[in-house]
Length: 267
Image (tube, rainbow, N blue to C red; front, side, top):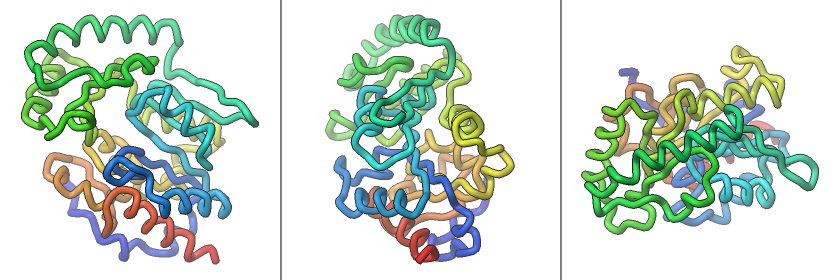
């Protein structure tokens, strides 16, 4: 395991000057206690005005992500753990699937047929209320609408799904089961090269990633510039790949803290 994350204050200004793209988790990274703080929304507008393109990378459903693209000052959303990229195009949006749309929809139905019977062994857990608005993955709620969070059941079900060979990962609120090969980083790499014209080598200097949970690990592994908001702390011992830096504050307040640091060197 790599060294513990350094305090955000130690992130050198010379590195931040090169940042042109900010990829970020959404739930509990941009939000705080389930809501989007005013300072976080302002930070998104300020980053856009400074020419920094922000792309949420979320396990959230495509329906939720469609709304994000339409109302927030962002350059697109990677949704459902990498299953689909939703791109703003003038006053409309365009969907780009990781694989052929028809095959992904068929495979999602197969995953549902496999997972739903197993959920009967974990009565505290349930499919997320937004499952009907998902196009590629299956999401299981353990801490969004379930209070208190069913952490032990989540760990048991996650282990069961992994033993089946499924591509399952835990976020701060859900277990997301994606199709083989689908991953936050895999789709991020495609978005950078195909839509932003950024090579993987260039990305290591001009992209910064922000996250809060174990399902952000592939992003932490690939981007030298990575930050965890403060609420990632309980998950650090479970990760092989850690963020390089950690914010002082949690959720959207930690994101705003990072944004202020980025913007300060551009004044």
